[in-house]
Length: 70
Image (cartoon, rainbow, N blue to C red; front, side, top):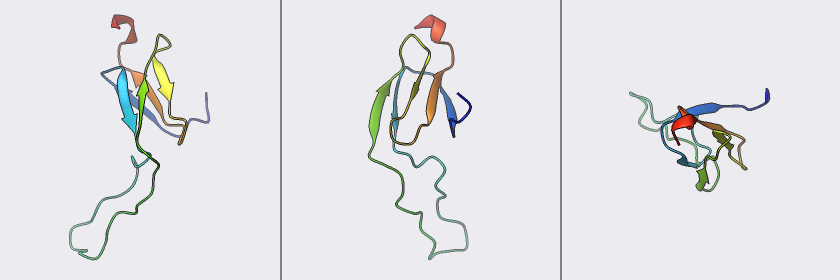
């Protein structure tokens, strides 16, 4: 699927997503800068025999590094 915005390779078939993967943290020298409270509720996902799972909120795809072993 070409329109998946972000793909994350993982080692375990049980993953979680909160949609905050690309939200920046505080920068050095900027004490007033705080990360935005964006994202979505944390959801837990299970990768099945396909070898991947997509988050229903943000469409992030989690791909199992070696799904043939699971």
